[in-house]
Image (cartoon, rainbow, N blue to C red; front, top):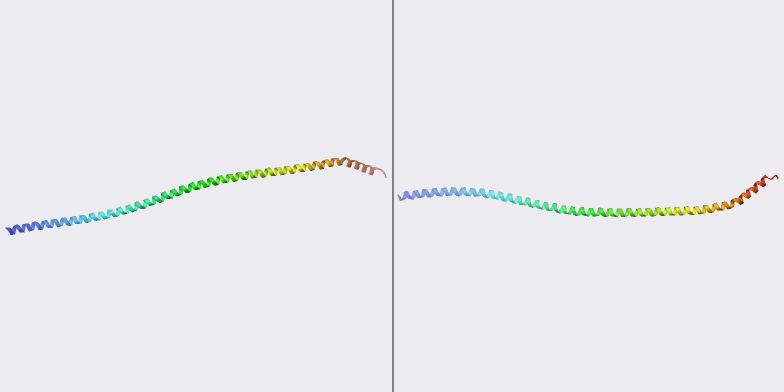
Length: 149
């Protein structure tokens, strides 16, 4: 009976061992699957973090480029305004110079006209003064030619 009891116990232990080994294998397989799932999740997380980092870098680059473009736009607006101011100042200066040259030319022409008028009046006066003696001389010459010789 002791042998039978020992054999029963042996069978029980062997069966328990097989069950425990099967459970260990199942747990081991389950842990291996969990480990693979965990590895996959870690890999996906790493990819997601890398993608997020790239997006953040791209976003930062875009923000930097936007800031640079805003500064450039402000600079170009200032340059354009400066160009407009200089162009207006140059146009105003040219207009003033053109007006001055026009007035100068008009004054010169007016002065020249005045001098010409003074000379012509003087000539006219001399002609008028010389006209009566010339008329007398002409009359005398006509009378001399009309006299029979």
